[in-house]
Amino acid sequence: MTTATSHAIGGAVPRQRTGIAAMAHDSWVVAKRNLRRMTRIPEIVVFGLMQPVMFVLLFSYVMGGAIQIPGTTASSSTYTQFLMAGIFAQTVTFAVAGASAGIAEDMTKGLVDRFRSLPMTRSAVLVGRTLADLVQTAFTLLVLALVALLVGWRIHEGFPKALAAFGLLLLLGYAFSWIGALIGLSVRSPEAATSAGLIWLFPLTFISNAFVPVSSMPSWLQPIAYWNPFSATVQACRDLFGNQVGPTPDSWPMQHSVIVSVVWSLIIMAVFSWLSVRKYRSAVG
Image 1 (cartoon, rainbow, N blue to C red):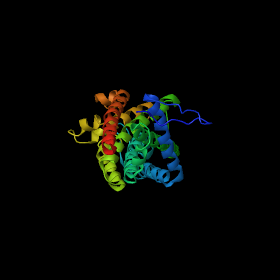
Image 2 (cartoon, rainbow, N blue to C red):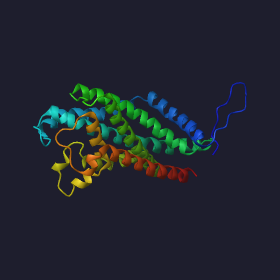
Image 3 (cartoon, helix red, strand yellow):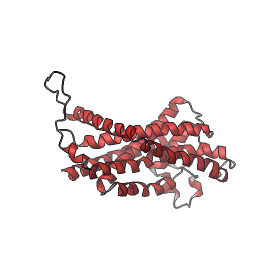
Image 4 (tube, helix red, strand yellow):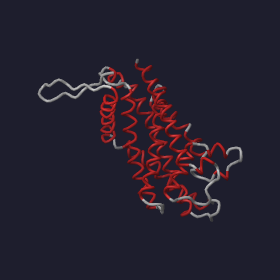
């Protein structure tokens, strides 16, 4: 579909874009609109930061001294090293709720119908929204990393590997934002989207290696936790940050966590972006 084009100064004929160039241009326009909205409503960013910061403080100082990692003695400082990769991963995935509510709100307010009246690629509305959410997630991760440093978390494998770890986290967050997009398109109100965007995340994040060692779980639950895409990203980040506490589990996904994390994220992104765009076209078509 031919996209809306930039008008040249002096009444020149607009330059037409098609294909990938059209989608990229239109997606960037939508992304900028959503980013401007975030700056005008700073509560969105502030409250998005409060939850992960509280998780860091509560788990580190309240529960950290009581949780023992195999091969170590129970202490808050040791647990903080173990914990932070899980908190980072939880933060990027919990952004799904905001993505779901935002898209649902746009649908209920008729904004999507206004976009529909413009000569723009339809997928750009979703791509732009998910890109804006990715920028907000990156900012949240930056602030959260600074808080983690204040409570004793450290990077031990150098800056390049740390960047790779944050890259994996953002890739996972972007993949999950497409799940949020599908949820937002499938419900009738922002309130329902927020609930639907969170309720399934709790078992996903807690049946994992994020907060406790998987070896402490019942034997029948351990394979589920090890093959959880969330667990793969957490383990990969621990390895890249140099935060592996105790022995690395001998499960295949944990031994090849970086590859498994990337593959899981790409699969989730491919499946749910296709489903979301299909749902969007049927919803507005």
